[in-house]
Image (cartoon, rainbow, N blue to C red; front, side):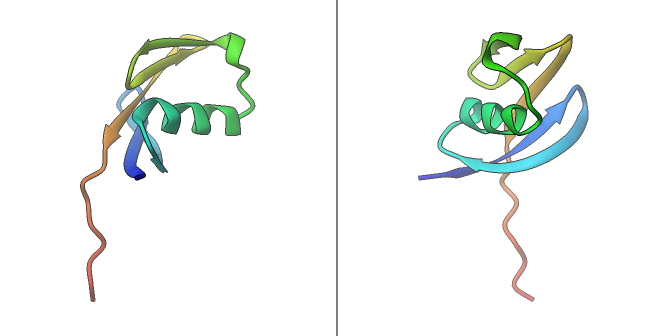
Amino acid sequence: MAQRYELHAGRRPVAVRAAPSAQVALLDYLRSLGCRDDELTRLGSAAIAWRGAVYEALPNEETPSRG
């Protein structure tokens, strides 16, 4: 089951992705930017570094309003 993650570059939010894990969400986003796997350094289950920038995935608990 996919969960929604808010992706951050440093403290700046850059995207929201649905994925089975935080790392998959990050990999999906960074690959969409053209990053190659050999350029990525996994820093844990929810963080990846690319060219000096650290990207983190945080669970996005927001639910859409029914309006």
